[in-house]
Image 1 (cartoon, rainbow over the protein chains, first blue to last red):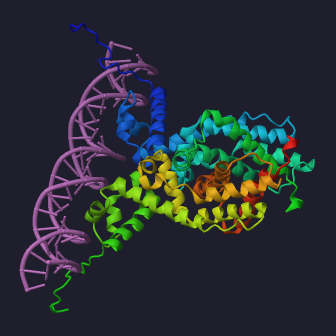
Image 2: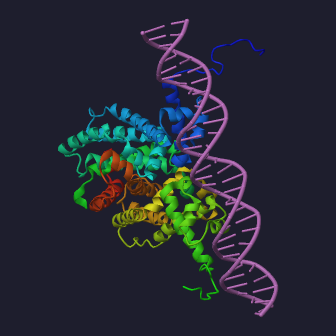
Image 3: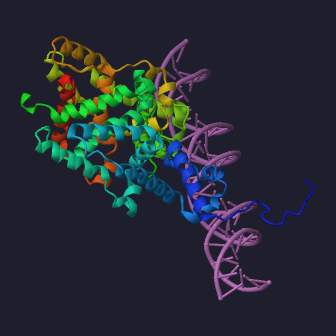
Length: 221
Length: 221
DNA sequence: TGACTAACGAACCAGTTCGTACATTAGTCG
DNA sequence: CGACTAATGTACGAACTGGTTCGTTAGTCA
């Protein structure tokens, strides 16, 4: 209380570039996801970190670059998850179902990522397009899907004429919509698509849908 | 040229409440869809109308209420389209396929509506929830789906255990994702989901998917 | 140990943005 | 035609917001 000499760090000022940068990214992710790109406030992000706005400009350059950095990190998370996919030892039907379920789980577990993707689409993917890092990623999941599809088709199990990208779109559609549009859907139709007790129902529904599509007797059309 | 007496309307000032109001809504729809709720500028909206910002506050009260009015009108358009659904004279399989295609077409034809829905979800549907008008709409399509589903199930054609709301979600997922996420999807996977020459491909894919799901031999699982 | 620099903080600034106060006019109705 | 009101335009302001200027300090290395 009485001013005991505490000479060092009068403000508790610590130097740790990595930590400061990471903390800014963490807070910015939440803030951009919460309020959108324009709605997010640089001052607000700064206030929620242990550092100041000055550091945001020091490390990232500006709001736009900060958002790009947030997107890059968010995408790297899903990319890493996809790299651990290990389903090719299963038969094609089980493999696809498992892959669909992993996508389902990942979407559910990362609602902030879903929101960031929605926001980036409102801005017509301008940040992704401008980012060198994001330009050259290419989803690991795509390769996996491609190989399973090939195996399934050769064995005669799969009849559908789709490629990996289209199938990925189909699976993502369902998972994305369920999380991204849960608010308007809930308000309009009175059903909570992410209600915990409905989780298994929708997870099964997704798998059934994809497998039914891939294995349908196309001659019946 | 020489100031001939043109006493009336020195500024071409005309009084037409309905037209002014409608014009504000038109412009606001485009502006909100383009830039998001926070990104949209009241001054910008006003500048693009033949009237002034004053009128926005006179008729709508504020930015928030204007956005709600925009949403209400956007939803009323799709509601009206759904009311003209006339597919129940078809057999259940054809009826569902037709309904899915109409949803597909409507999403493609109204990208601004899709963007508004995305934006409203970022804001957790707060405007829809607060709107009395939107609270009590209930999609006409839902009734149609329900009846087709019932017919199909009674005749033994449909094996899937879904209700109308879930099937609506399934169909909407695919249509919504294709339009809403086309930018990030295109940037990341190099495929334009709304490319005109791919339209039939995806329209067929959607129908195949839904029908396969509904008619699949569930015993095989 | 002293100089050097990366890392940091406080205060500030110029432009923007939602909203309003005040004045004015077009149509309408007795 | 004269009064009255709905509809409209102008100008302004207070608060906010992204970004910057200037100065300070912690760690490091010769």
